[in-house]
Amino acid sequence: MIECATHLPSASAVDLSQLETGSCAAGQRDDAPRARPSQSNSSRSRNDDGWNQLAENLALAERLLQQRRVAPDATDAIHDEGLQLGSSHRPRPWRGGDDTERACRRLPRYMMGASDNSMRRESPMAQITLNGNPIHTNGELPAVGAKAPDFKLTGGDLKDVSLADYKGKRKILNIVPSLDTAVCATSTRRFNEAAGKLANTVVLVVSADLPFASKRFCTTEGLQNVVPLSLMRGKNFAKDYGVFIEDGPLAGITARAVVVLDENDRVVYRQLVPEIGQEPDYDKVLAAAR
Image 1: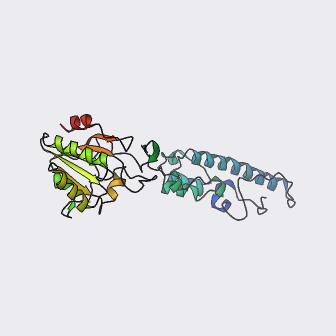
Image 2: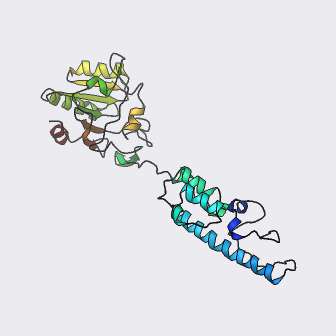
Image 3: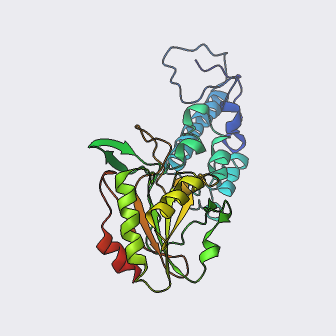
């Protein structure tokens, strides 16, 4: 029900903040008859004109908000000048965030859109499979041409390792769930063999294994052309590279993927292996690394 004072302010002095809470609930229709005090014809005419202007103004504001084109200065003009938008207050393209908040705070609650958090686009999830069963990673691999996210991983000597440690070299990031599995072990051997034939290139094998275990594996296998790195102190790596498994039995470790970086740490090739039990496409990886 609309319960307003008997005297409505003129359209030029309308403050929409009054409509958000309290005496006027804009946007709700009132079809029931409403008793009004006796008024003169001129007073009733002024009030009717005010209601008509208010309805037009609210419709304009709602349309602007729905188009997400309300800018802060245009919103202030709506409030301060009774929705009289002039040529000097043309709305700018919507930028979201504070603009949306400022636009909404002067409008009734029924006209307020979703919060900024709900408008924020979430990172897309990639789907892979484990023994044919679908599971998901937290995002996608860095795009080709993009600067690779830096990282802090742990080497076999327990020292922190970052991209800066291999500055000026081409890098193959062989990302595996664990070297204690047959496919991960096989891919590491294959890359170790190929790395000896690649000039100015280093192969980094990134896994969830502890540094002791990954170092022992490489020592036992006689693998000297790859560098095992652990997520022990660099768990953000998996999320930054979009390979963190969100669900399924392997939730919490990485998917199988390969990312090739040039000397300037730009991504030149990426490959997310669709089935964890499969090996990566070695030919495409090595072609990109040459």
